[in-house]
Amino acid sequence: MELSTTGPNKRFEDIKHIDENGVEFWSAREMFPLFGYSTWQAFDDVVARAIKSAVNAGQIAENHFSQLTKMVEVGPNTKRQVKKRQSTKQYLRTIKA
Image (cartoon, rainbow, N blue to C red; front, side, top):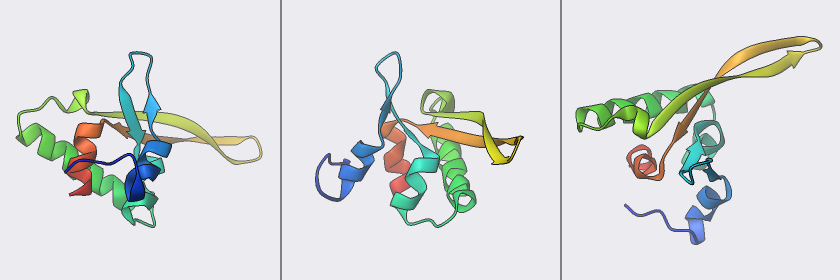
């Protein structure tokens, strides 16, 4: 399945990021509403299955997915870590399928 840069998939291009090496990637936290999920937690399960699918297909998951953490403010003078996942375009197709 090819993701178009126009029409309904234009929103994917709107949230695309490019790293310092020129590699395109998408943040799962920005993607989950585009896939129709109302919560990050439900979408995180889908991404976890896509990672397992990549491994089962003989791919090196770290080449297509990364998991990071970032600190977010949850109140005055209070922060906590949240999980942040990123995916390459190749595995966006796996998640979308």
